[in-house]
Length: 103
Image 1: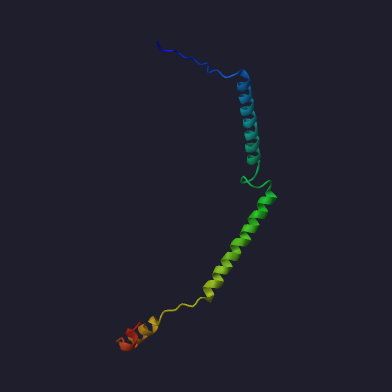
Image 2: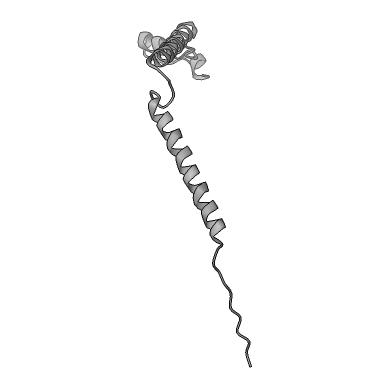
């Protein structure tokens, strides 16, 4: 004959109350964090002065990068590998000399 086992899967009321209290506390903390986050400008700055200071700092950084790019573009020289010389000689003579064919 087979034995029948039964189990009481109920959870004690203390455990349920404790779990509900933890959930309620977590929800409260989450709502407080969300409210604090929403009060910040762009989710990061506490007031308009902080936002403005960050914006001005970003403008300075972007401006200095633009100046660096312009400076580097001016300082670079284009090396055509003698192609312009070959082209100019061809225009003048209508032929490409053997000395230029080594390019």
